[in-house]
Length: 355
Image (cartoon, rainbow, N blue to C red; front, side, top):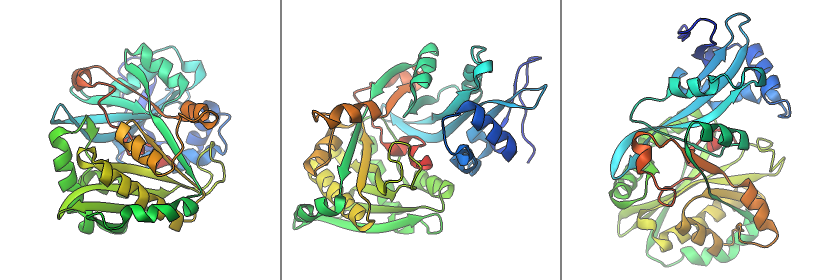
């Protein structure tokens, strides 16, 4: 498929699908854009190279053919004010320094966004925050970054949490090579129940997970669904992180809780699912489990299971500085969003797709 070029004004950089850019030009751009990021060839494994062409655009200088900017977006559907809304998460977004200040970044966002969409960003840098402010976005608002060291030890007392409580748990492993047949019905049933009264959130049904598995076909997601009285009531997803993919964690063997959902934020269901997530992490033989969330019920369930939070006197400030921030465009459905009534986890951005 030949790339679509947008060059409406003479002299302006052209826009093409980023996945159409040759490897050597991507590497050259990465070296200029992120000189402190090692190794720079990480850009060659970016998730958007396996996604639809419209998920990322590159800005190209017409005279030289050099890549001058990139904007990647994660498509999604959200439920806002009780109804479905098309949404985009702005993910990788950068303009090389000598092209900054010309409105190129704004044009890339405008090129990808559509009227009536909810446009947001989660887990963004200080530079991105400054630029989003210039675009009139709301925020930044913080989340909580929670960590649990040594899940193999922590899981021992948590076994009692899942015993004799009337909640049925079912474990599955999801990969790109296996269908969602066994859990699709539960995922859609949970999402249908969430849509009735839950805060603004990304739809988390079978279609969303099918897209994720297609993008990350080589990965294994450990999912545990919970049912109460035969009705699907929630789920938790754990994944072993790619070693060395996080500059913060370095070479540590770590796992992330990609997502955690309970209908009506039921505290018992949440606590049971977190306990099961710790048990899964223990089986994966990692030394650390991490999760990011904006939800108070999530934080309570995680703390009750031994997770460390930003409220601690020594480690807390470090976690607070590392916690992902989120911002959103106030246009259209974004005008209905309240920072205290919106759900964000690692599943809502490209964090899970990158690490």
